[in-house]
Structures are given as structure tokens and as C-alpha cells.
Image (cartoon, rainbow, N blue to C red):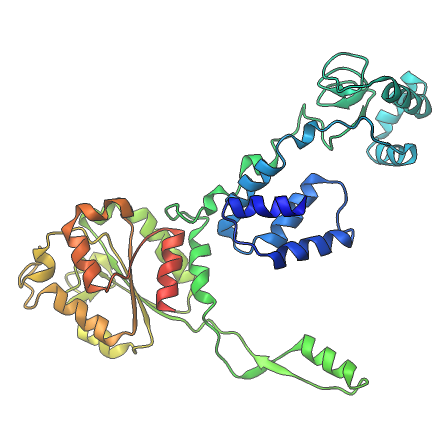
Length: 390
């Protein structure tokens, strides 16, 4: 069973290994869950899926593998009376216990169930006598009877929701989707994994306890480096013109980045990078900052991320005076190269769908300038960009 389940996960491109499969089997042997499909769904997801972006793939795989399981017959199976009685009594309210008297009490109901299981030789759906589904018999699932025992289901479908894996509640985590409020921080979280610096000033509790026990109770204190978010990020946002279409996405990216990184500096530009940038769009013509000042201020260890659709006239990149807003003494490519020569790690995030990039010559020019380190502004794209600059 578990091998087939494992292969189904692999079929849906959920990155899991035999190590996770063995861990799942080990946990099940411990009896953490028993005979509950919802519990197994949650447990397997915890063990087998290591990254939230694969939750939707997991739901699809789970739905495929367990499709039809709720229709499995219980006939020819031994149903211990003590087990049925205990499970049944756990879910009875006082009002329901009073209603049982209509059938002569719990003893009479259990006796009738046992007799009908012995009489019935096949699966039954509907009707008012046999054990089955969708009927009015007091025994079964999905049907209705105020004095009944449910067989094979943990919830009455008259008021229950669709199964979690059918609802696919995590479909927004698809790594190829454009960014949204739910998954943008998930993408940026990848960059934080590379931010660990600090002195040995934090108590390592687990190692201290283990070492002290091994020393016969003699205290042996161990310290570990305290975690700091030390990633230094410099972001350049293209604003105006064709970027107006992506304002909401860029605002979400900007907000999430501010929340994630302590060392974050940002600047704005229009279309292509030139000799001046700014930080306040309301005063973009009065309060500008020389690009050379930015380069002098921030060390080469800053990781630089450009955010823009790179859609413009090619002359704005390769010609003097090519800017549509002012006269630039040098071509935009010179200013881009100045940044690339100073900072060690640079990537470009493009909010325009990657399938459209080939339609714009300016995009291919920018791609060449950044050495093909342009990525789509999706969860997967941010992941690849971060891998490049980390």
C-alpha cells in the first residue's frame, strides 16, 4: 500500500524520498493514528511534504490514490461488537440516547445490526432496511435516520463539507502562480535560510541536557550561534508606464520584503537604470540620489534585486539621451554595468508572464546585461533568483 502511495506522490511531482516513506511507516507503527483517513492525510502531509509550495500537488496525489475508498464494502469483515459499542457511545448526546429507546435501547439496535450484516450478502445503496449508503435504514452512511448507526464514515454527509484534499485548500501555493498575499512571504522565506551569523551567546539547551546526562549530572554548558537575519538586500523598483499594471503585485512584494529583512534598502527608477534614483515617488524630481552615491554607501555584499518588466524602447538602454524623461549622458547599459561590477550578486524579477518575454526586444537586451539572471515574478521564479544570489 505505502509503496503505491509513495509512487503516486512521485507521479504528481511531490519531491519525497524513501527516507520520508520509512519515517511515515515508523510513525504509523507507533500507533499515532488509527483507521482514520483524515488523520492519515494530515500525518502523511507533515512527513512527506517538506515545502508548502507542494501542498497542492500532494492534495491531487492523495485524491487520486484514495479515490473511491469511501465506497469500500464492509461485508465479509468481522466487526467486533465491543468496538462498535464503544465507538458508537462516544458520539451519543443525551437526546440521542433517549431516542434509542424507540428501538428498544442500544442492545436491541446492536442485535439488529448484527442480524442484518449476517443476512446481507452484497453492497446496498438506498432503501430502508439493508445496511448501506444513502438510504433511511438506521445503519449506514450518507443517508438519514434519527436512530441510526453509521458504518464506514466519520461524518454525516447531510451537513459535512467536501474532503480537504478535494477542496485543495492549498492550491495558491502552486509555485508557477503569480505572487499573491498568501504565498509571497513563502517565496521570500527562502532567502532567510541563508541568513545566519552571530557569536556563541545562545544556550544550546538540547546539547547541554544530553552532555550533562552523559557526565553523570555534572553540568556541561554548551552555547550555539544566535540566529540573526543578516541578509542585506538592495531592491530597485521600476515604476510608471507599463509597470502600472503590476502595481499591486509590486506593493505586495515590497511589503513582504520589508517584513522579512532587517537590512533592506530600496530605490525607484523608470524603465532603465540611469545616473539618479529616488525613494519618494511624490518628490522624484526634487529629491534624487546619485547612483554613484548608492554604490559608495552599500558594500558589495548586498544582494541586488531589480523588479521591472523591462519593456521599453531598446534605445532607452543602449543610446545616450535615450531616457524618455531627461537627457542621460551615458547609455543606460553603462549604469547597469556599473552596478553589476560593484555588487557580487544581482538578479532581475520580471512581473510580465515569461511567455511574453520574446515579444519585446528590450527584454532580451536586459537579459543579456544581467547575464540571463532574469526570473519571472512567481514563487518558483523568486526561488530560482534567490538560489542565484545566495
